[in-house]
Image 1: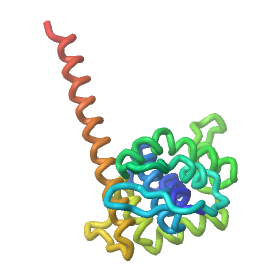
Image 2: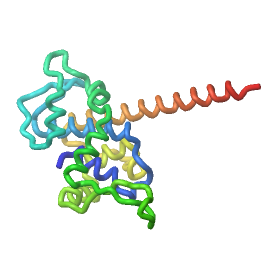
Image 3: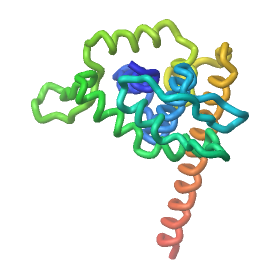
Image 4: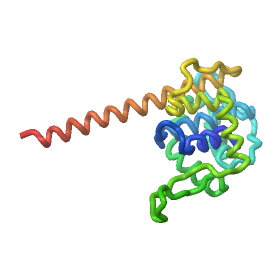
Length: 201
């Protein structure tokens, strides 16, 4: 399992304090992919630019797809631009892949058979591994989860990373999620103002 899949499984846990937005999660997933690509040596960072390396050896289809979408000609893509481009609808892609692999199960809430469905992590070795990383507050997973508001925004003291490139990606994810939230708030204010205009006598 990749960091992105672990993050998605943790986000589907029914116990987090609040639901994670699809847009926020998609941005964090694209950042998690970059971190795994850094770890495999498939990319390096030159400042805020993603520099592709050699071929990626992975049996994970989504991570291989991410590697195939890298910009391989200079000037290389900026991390922020990658997060927005790759992150578009990425949460839906991970949901479909994890359901297909049996890592997510649809369950009905309530006692009635026609109650609303919800997704929950399946009891699989991969799911237990993701839960174990989360329980141990593994720094990368904890930091990415924090960017999307999981576990009350844990932690106040952001964990240090051995790899400066990983810290750079996490910071870029945080900034992108904040930018998305600012867009949401602006739209809410604009919609409220428009509604008040129509209500005005």
